Length: 133
Image 1 (cartoon, helix red, strand yellow):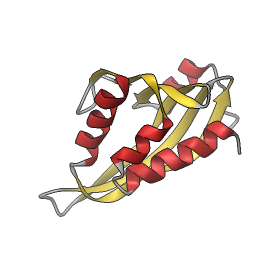
Image 2 (image 1 turned 180 degrees about the horizontal axis):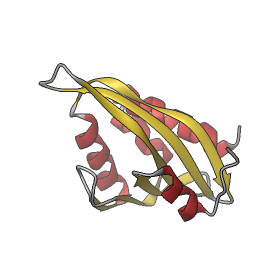
Image 3 (image 1 turned 60 degrees about the vertical axis):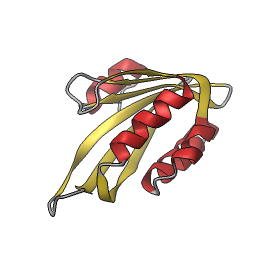
Image 4 (image 1 turned 45 degrees about the vertical axis):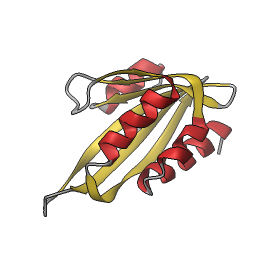
């Protein structure tokens, strides 16, 4: 396991336990978070405070559930994480979820860029990775 993969394991564990202060341990001060237009909280967020608040806003909609990493693929300073989210939103009895990917760029061991992709193939293209499966 690389240092970046270990950091992302810790990051997603913190998200799943709703520890928004702990997620910031993985962020570079210049972090940029980009969520695509077809996502519920689309936009670009800059700096630790904005990114933490953005993640906290999304996480606050969960009554219970997880966003579990399924696979890590690396290319230089870029890491693509295949994710499986399964959550029950507040005020709902139904479970929802899906499979998607997040992309990360690391600098000096910290996340400097954090992007989400609805389609895993788009994350691979972004990172210049060919999945062997």
